[in-house]
Image 1: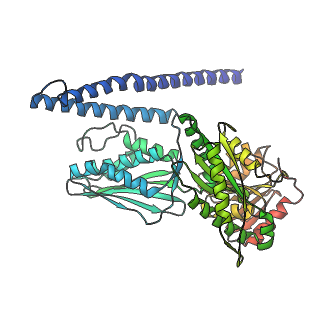
Image 2: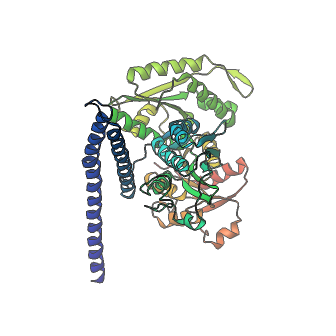
Image 3: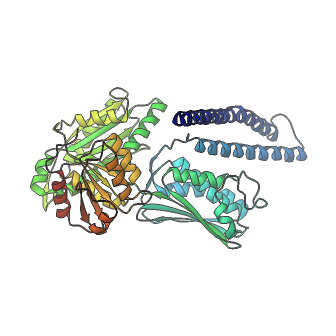
Length: 519
């Protein structure tokens, strides 16, 4: 009876939450449609009067119209901030991620804010390395964060000061910092800096909603990043945020889905070409996995040069030695023409493999939306099936490690030995993928942020779907410590860092002995 009563209370609470969520959604919709339209009308007619299209005006009238326009712009910014925060809290922000080059993005933002800096007599500077990795992110949202941080730096820096945007590449992330020589923030106010409606200098730099930093922090966190700030009163502040580095191969499924959705919204064609090296297994047997891996990288670079890349186009090396070319807004005829040109481009090249020079040939296959498929998964499956691969199932191994270089090394090493490999950058990522895919073996790092390997291991063993999957724990810790923490199942083994490649492969073979590849 008590359980039934508690369940009834939970159902009522859930219904109330749904009702409040609907109210919030209706409010967001109303603000978006019912307030923006009259504001746009007010702004348009103010411009007509200011430009004297309706007749001459006096200097006083021009000043009054300027005040109206300034306040309309401020009201639009307030509405935008409120809508952004409401969407974030309601979980309605859909990131349109793509592979973004950092230097052009930051340069464009700096150029767009130069007039604002010049008006305040604040110099804008930029420090970006000559070569820096890109990020897999929503470029509009990253731009929004940068505009807010740089705009604040200009707003709170006196004339004659400067604001500097710095980009630094860290082992696991790309860090963006905006420093200024402004008024600074008291130490006791820093913990409250990213709270909603928080204005620490309401009398400086004009009025605002106090939502900009809160929105920026949430947008960065939605990307899996983090934001922080340091400051000294009277000397200035530094606001930093970091976005995780991704290898193209890991982000490719999400990228393919996002680009296809863009094509659907635009009513455009969208094609995928898959390119495979002919007689790849024979080449691998003759020259070895490492040399054939270098060969594939050469093929990838040649094809990148061959594709006239536009926004949305991508050339990456995918599973089993394939090279996948994503072509935005290209129909079937165009994809076939490009595939033929790529095939000839590779055939005309001389490659260096194992100290020998040789020509290779490739096979190509393509799939196009909407003629042949309507989902990203179908496009890739149809294109890959066109290469006429053997249909025998392959052993699937999941690599779980927060270090991108280790994930990439293990992925390439195992794929070249005919394993299918899934890569996960965190514990939650791994558990999420295990719900959708069946794997035969997990290589699990122990020391990871958010959720460490111990917790991942125990959650796997508690789930009937994953409890029997063998696990190789890859760690720098001793085995006895693992036993003390409960890793005493016979269904796992250890691989100590740093390890030799031969030791890794031996452990994998041992763990998989007697197992049939999962379907």
